[in-house]
Image 1: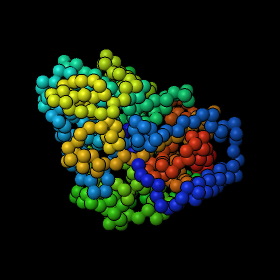
Image 2: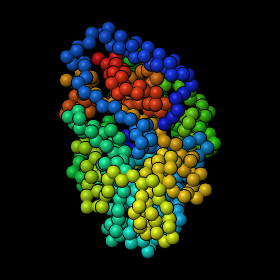
Image 3: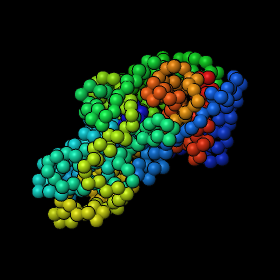
Image 4: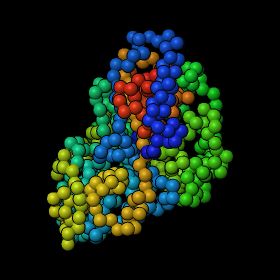
Length: 453
C-alpha cells in the first residue's frame, strides 16, 4: 500500500453511457442488498449509524490520491523533477519527486527535506524562502529552512495544514480520510515524527484476514492462490527493469497473468490497482520496478494523523486560506502570490501543477517529465455500527463486489475501540461511484453485509 492510504483512471468502456452505467450499478447493488436481506438482517446491529465518504478525486486541492508513472514514463522522470532548479530560484517538493519512496508519506517528508537542502546549497544567498503548500513536504521543507536560520513563509490554499493527511472525528473516533499507514517502520523517519506528535503506531497483520464471496456470504475459493500467482508475476515482470513503453497489464500478460476468475480479479484489485490507484492498463510498467521499501511492519497511526502536520506547523509562519495563482522569478527574487522572497519551494501535488495551479514557467524538459505522471484514485468509505457484527479479523476481502468496489475492508475496532470499519475502492471503480455520499455508503454497506454477516 502506498502513500499511507493503500494505494486515477477514466471510466472504462465496459459500461458506455451514463444511463447504462447507472442501470448496471443499481442492479448490482439491488442484487447484493437482496442477498443480504435473505440471510436474516438484524436491524438493531446491521444498520450503520454513521458514514464518511472520501472525495479526493474531486477535491480541488488534490485532484486525486497520489502519483504514478503513466504508460511510456521512465522512472527517471521523478529524478528530473527532483533535480530541477527553475529559474535558478525554485525547487519542487512532494511525493511525486521522491525517487526512493515515491507516492508515500515518508517519500513526501523526505522530499521536503531534500528541497530545503537544495535551496541552501544552490541558492546560498536566499535569506527568505516562500513555500507553497502546507502538506507534509512543504512543512518539512519549512522546518529545515527555519532551523538553518532562514526566514520562511508558508502559503496554504486550504483552511488547514496537512494536505492529503486529513483526520475526521464526526464518527466519534479519528477516521483517516487520506494517509493512514507508516509502511515499513525500520529506519523510517516518520516513526520518530509520529511519536514526537504524541501518537502511537499499531501493526497491521496481513495474515489476519478473511475472504468471502458477496454472492453467497461464504468463504471465497482460490483467493490465496490468486494472490500468490499475481505477486509472482509482478516479481518476474519487474526483473530486469521493464520497458517504459509497456503497461503493467502488458508485462503481466507476458508472464501468463490474466484476471479471468473472480479470485484473480479480486487479487488484481487489492494487490495492484489499489496499491497504485491506477488500473493496470494505464499504469506504466516501470512502476513495478521503481523505488525502495523500508523493512519492518506496516503500522496504522493511532490518535489522529493530522496532529503530525499540526506539530510541524507549530512555530512556523503558515498563512492559511491563501491560494497562490502563480510563482514567478523576477530578477534575483521570486514572487509567489504577492509574497516576495529570494527562493521558493513549490510543494503542491503533481496534479495541481499539471492543472496550472500555481502557474510556473517550467523548462520544457521539466514540463515533459511532469506530464508523464498520472494521479491515481483511492477512495474510502467508513461505516459505524451499534456493535461489531463482522468477523474478529483485521482485514476482510469481498469477492464479486459491484465493479470490484469495496472489495477490501479494515476492522478499526482494535485501533479505535469503536465498532467502525472502512473499505477501499481504487482506480476506475473509484471514479464510477455514485455522486451522492449516501448512495455510496449504502452500496458499501450492502457489500460488506452480504459478504460477512
